Amino acid sequence: MTEKQQLEDWIAQSNHIVFFGGAGVSTESGIPDFRSVDGLYHQHYPWPPEEILSHHFFFSHTEDFYRFYREKLIVHAKPNPAHLRLAALEQQGKLEAVITQNIDGLHTAAGSKNVFELHGSIWRNHCLECGHKVSLKEIESSDTNIPHCPVCGGVVKPDVVLYEEGLDQQVLASSIAALRKADLLIVGGTSLAVYPAAGLLQYAQPNHLVVINRDPTPADREADLVIRQPIGQVLAEG
Image (tube, rainbow, N blue to C red; front, top):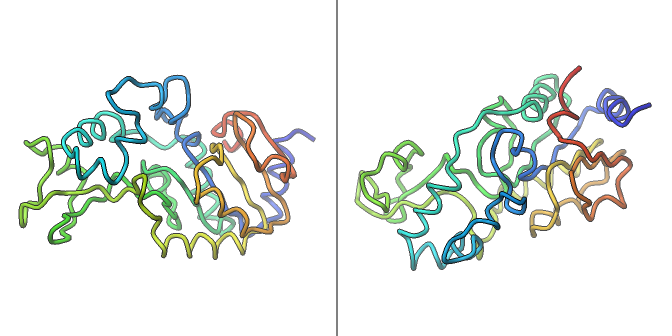
């Protein structure tokens, strides 16, 4: 039995599948991850990406933040076979939830409904003064370097979790609840190096743990199956 056949066999046996994913899920859609050779950590800016994408930098260098944010994080891409297969499994009543560290919104674009975005989404933004919701289109079409609220003129902040910021407690609680119900946990496209997100796996006690990732992860030693192939190819139907 091949690795893919084993995975498909476990998928067929399971009714509470949870998928936990990271940047590697979106690379096949053309979005570079942070740590790849052409990822954000290898770009040349006056500050490292983790500095630019921090809470204090947003407030102290808002214009520089938005220059980087618009250029590197606002990416219009299409879901790949991994996103589409997960959405199909949910529609079939087999997938409990998608828990993602990505902010690109591709799981939702693919049709998944029960998506827990640990680090937020580029598609949601709000005014820091009055709380007015601002669309991504408004951010992109803003005629100023720093987007301002159309209602009160306050500075707009993306609903993404920056360095130094805590995760949304409701999203965390929902993710933990889903993990506790998982009979099959698929971890894909993540190095499991970012905490506290990676620490959520401790709440799962699935019948089977599958890791699909290009490079080794801390979860490999606990996994029942480790697949070192592109996740879109692995999850593609057929």
